[in-house]
Structure formats: C-alpha cells, structure tokens
Length: 288
Image 1 (tube, rainbow, N blue to C red):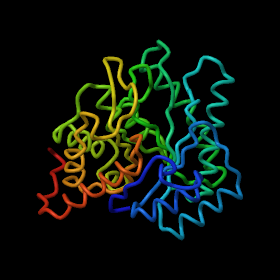
Image 2: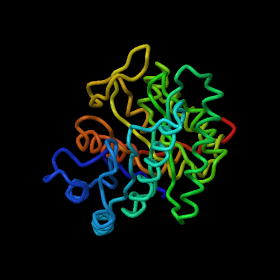
Image 3: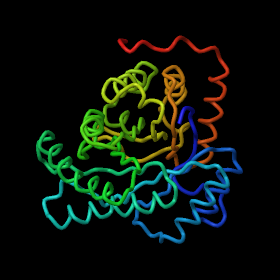
Image 4: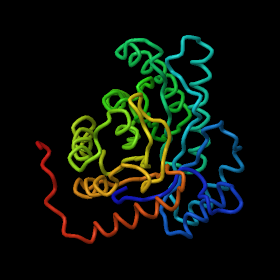
C-alpha cells in the first residue's frame, strides 16, 4: 500500500442498517477508502457472513482491518485468562482474514503492578503461540498491538515497536491520540515527525508505506486517556499530524475513532488532500 486511505472505526453513524455490509457500502458512498471491523465486544460473525463482507468490500473497493475484543490480557495472573485472551486474538484473526482484512489490532494487556520489563517478556511469550498457530493455519494477516492511552496498560510506543521488531508478522497500530494522552506531549509537527522517524528506525523505513493509524480527538488527565472526542472539540493538532505524514511519505490506513466517525474521517481526508496539493519538501533524511 503506497497511499493513505481514510476510514472509520466501525459502521458509519449514517449507515442503515447498522451492519458491516451496510457500513462498507456507506463508506464507499462517502468516498472513504477503508473501515475497521469492530469486534471489541466479541467476535460475533460466522464464516458465511465474513465471506459476504469480503465480497462487498471487494466490490466497493474498501480496504478492511479489524479490532479484537477489549477483553484481552496476555499478562493475566490466571492461566485461564491467558488462554481465553489468546483465543480472542485467534478468533479475530481468523474471521478478519475471511473478511479480506489486511490486519487486526488488539490491546495486549495490563501491567498489574508488575515491572514493565517483565510484562514485556510475559506478553511476548504468550503472543508467540498465537503467531505459531496462525502460521499453521496459513493465516498471513498482520497482527498489530496498539499504542495505548493509559499508564496502566501495556503498549507504550517502544514496547509496541520492540514486539514488531522481534516477532514475525507483528506490526504496530500507532494511535497518535493515545500517545498524546499518555505522554501529555507529542501534539505538534515535531512530535509527530519524531514518532514516524522512530518507527522507521525501529522496524525499517518501508514500514511507513503500510501503516495502521488510529486518530481521534481525546480527553485525558494525568492518568492518560479518559475518552475520545470529536477532533474540533479537542486540543489534538490533526492538521500537523497530517502534514508530518505527508512529509514522511506515509501510506496505509488512517482509521478515525472520533464519536462522529465518518464526519472526522472525511475532515481528515479533505485536509490531507489539500496538503497533498501543495509542493512537498525533499524526502526526510534517515539520519534526522
């Protein structure tokens, strides 16, 4: 993927009925390019329905991705919770692949008071069997741990990039709003640009041609993320993010998670289109 596609997290608010099929059709009608299938409350889609979703997405030329259930914690103390978390990731990956999705996103877990370094090793250890099982099944979907917005959650930028570097077919889901809420920073052209440079350094410059990005307005406090907001109701400098993505030649999917979904997705797409009509600066040096 060499260009940016814009879309929304789940079925657009204006779609009728509220089904994945109708959502894909509405995304295409609006002129957007992608949609994230939201399995956040559970994977409640069978194989037949998944194949129908795939066919509609292909007809409408809408790229798909998916989000796994929130009930995942690969650092849980109880073995049964680890096993159920692994199964939720597998279920999402299987159905998402049948839908024709290119990747699936998940929140990897919580620190639970454990040292972050130990949590990293535990989550990595518990993710490996999931990847091995997908390999056995011939499922080549990208598995993407998300940059999370709360200090209690595993998933700071470096943790996600390290998993992506050390494990096959793992790549980051970069949620810029989450990182802004988590750090109380990274809300300017320079901050966004430094994040993109860090991604290229950590997992290769080619990774910027196929990103999976989440964007929204965000309400936060010193503990991190509280809830998502519409872009214009927040302090998030989406215009500077888009400029940084343009200047770093970023391609892939931008999924809008604002409450108004398609409205902000269209705002992002229009804003980016206007930026793209401007004369671009030279390609940034890898050393900078």
